[in-house]
Image (cartoon, rainbow, N blue to C red; front, top):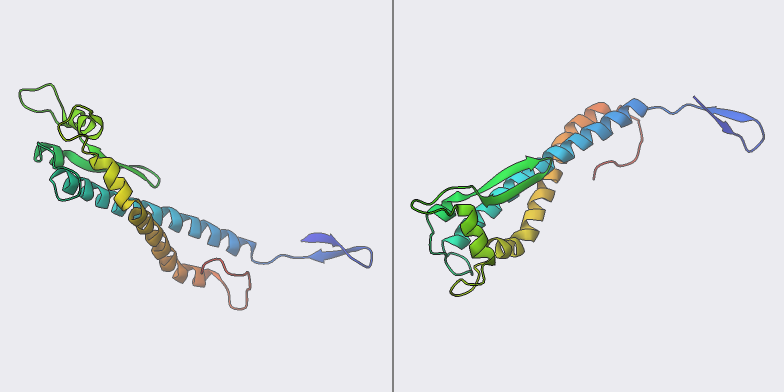
Length: 167
């Protein structure tokens, strides 16, 4: 119960109903957003991983890399934390060499002494797919919120009016 100053003097007692329901809605929505973002990052990361591999083996605009087997197969997506991930080569050693696939990735991406110039597999893949990856994450968040609507409808009692929380 809250006391609010009246325009006619004195105070009016106001009771705000539905606070617990609002809290449940907000917490449920927050969980669904995080879950959707995680699903979206996994889907987008897998797309980027595959696109980098396609670039390495010569199926995209960049010049094909010499070592298409070991290097391309080392490209992986790792989920790092809440709605975060990274696409990079796992560290695999080459036989009869001190180089690893991480070394080769850096040389291919940034090396100035490469015949034909740097391959830019990661940079160009990011440029080509950044918008699509963002859309994937956004769509997964929206899908999770839609799945949550059944729960939201169960929390709201008939006749309660709180405005629109989800479109």
